[in-house]
Image 1 (spheres, rainbow, N blue to C red):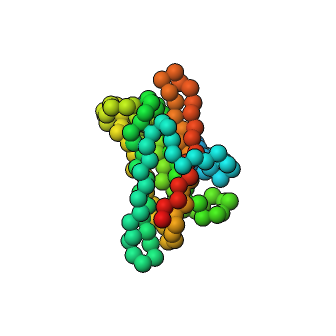
Image 2 (image 1 turned 180 degrees about the vertical axis):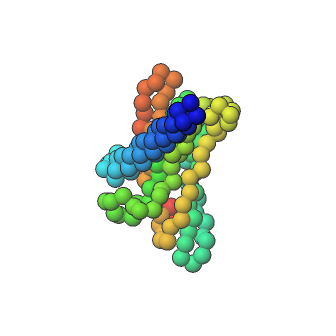
Image 3 (image 1 turned 90 degrees about the vertical axis):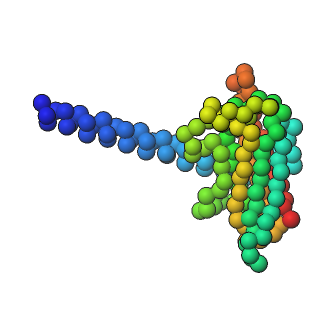
Length: 163
């Protein structure tokens, strides 16, 4: 009986590990799909009617610059938000450097609703994405996906140049 209990516990642990591994692979595939989607897009805007973007650049040294992009002030209810921001270095391949993202690797869903904040329930005021670049101007491209209250999917592409 003890051997049977131990065997069942081992099988449960193995099943849990394999499902976590499958979830991680799905998250990586989502990241790659969104990355390629940005590289293939030609429909970039400089701003959105659905939310605000506030970019900034801070020198870290003579050769490195930190960029920050704040996404907030939702104008509509945005549910299940996913964001990927990439540095456009002219390359048409996926960088080996991880790019800033929201909603892809976390085990939470994020929602922005005008004038509502409840972090425990995933209702956030906004997001801050940042990274480091060795050159200026910094060219950023972003895709943001979300659903509305009727579960309709939305997707926007933004391109920003930070001096």
